[in-house]
Length: 90
View 1 (spheres, one colour):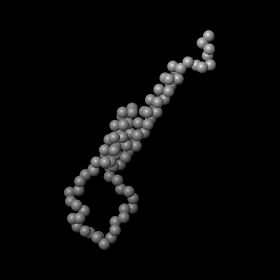
View 2 (cartoon, rainbow, N blue to C red):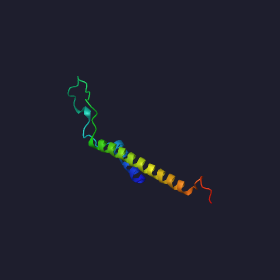
View 3 (cartoon, rainbow, N blue to C red):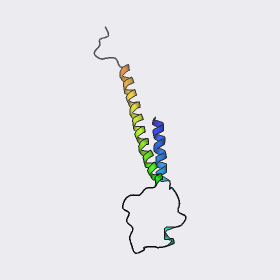
């Protein structure tokens, strides 16, 4: 489970870091509305970036769950091996 979470987180990061597609021409090919300033209304993400963010978050959640599970199992196993301090052994 930990490995699966780590793999999903890494794939999500790769989707975010690697550029999705290249433009066939530059933005400077023509200058329409060159006297106005563009201000986007909201944050616009490509579908690939959205998938990358989702994979990264799910991968981190699975990784955290798996690490917590392993830590809990280790704690339970160490508590079963220790003798009870209240018993005298008689």
